[in-house]
Structures are given as structure tokens and as C-alpha cells.
Image 1 (cartoon, one colour):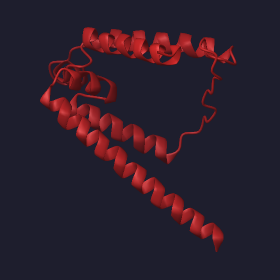
Image 2 (cartoon, one colour; image 1 turned 180 degrees about the horizontal axis):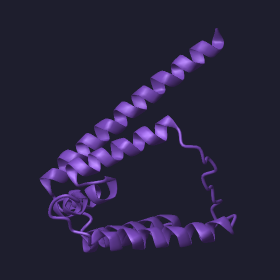
Image 3 (tube, rainbow, N blue to C red; image 1 turned 45 degrees about the horizontal axis):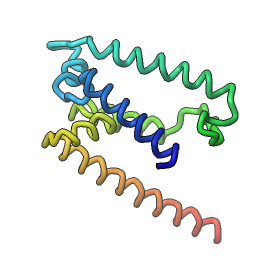
Image 4 (cartoon, rainbow, N blue to C red; image 1 turned 90 degrees about the vertical axis):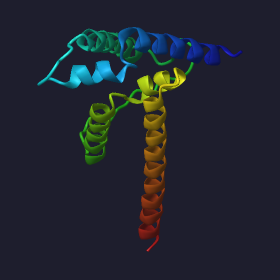
Length: 149
């Protein structure tokens, strides 16, 4: 197995284990965290705080490097402007998370446990991704046609 594949597998296993251990793959726990007016469970704040801390450290290290630890070039985002696509995507993500109690990573972990709700969420997520790709392709074709005129 190539070291890139091993690194991806190892990272995914650690991530999935962390999601299970923290309760992020349990939609009931997540929905309790989001229910500020009801039976609020603040325990996921620690999980999110830990994730933010790891992310801040990782980006700080990545900014000082040109290549990853596996020798691949590092491509950090350069766009800083909030645009309609980002705002609509964030709203869609938040609404989906609030309704289902899943976001993509935990849904895939829960899918591995055979949870029926995770199956439905994952199928809906894949359908949404396919619709997005279709719309993007259609818009790109329209833009190219306009530029030829």
C-alpha cells in the first residue's frame, strides 16, 4: 500500500473513531446540542473547541510549509470574500444538520454502523451533490455559450 493511501486510511480511522467517541455520530446528541431552548446538551462544545484548536495548529504549520509531510504541494485557500455560494452552502449545511442531526463525516461513520437514519441522510446528501453537479455543469455550458456570442 502506498504511503498516501495508508495515511488517508489512518487519518480516516482516527477521524471516525473520534466522531464515535465524541458522540458526533449520534444524531440525538447533536440535536440536543442544537436545542438551545429545550434540553440543551453543551458537551459538544468541547469537541468543537478541540477541532478548532487542531485546525488552527494545522493551518499555522501548513502556512510555513510548501510541501506536506508526504511531499505533496500544499494548496491553501486564498479567497477571503464571502459570496452568495458560500452563504447559501452554509445555510444548506446548517439546515440539514439541524433537521437530521448529521453532517457528512458523522453520517458516513453512522452509515458504517447500519443506522437507518444515516442511510436516508447519505442518500439525500448524494442526491443533493448530483443535483449541484448538474446545475453547475448546466451553468458552465450557458456561460461558455454566452462567451461565444
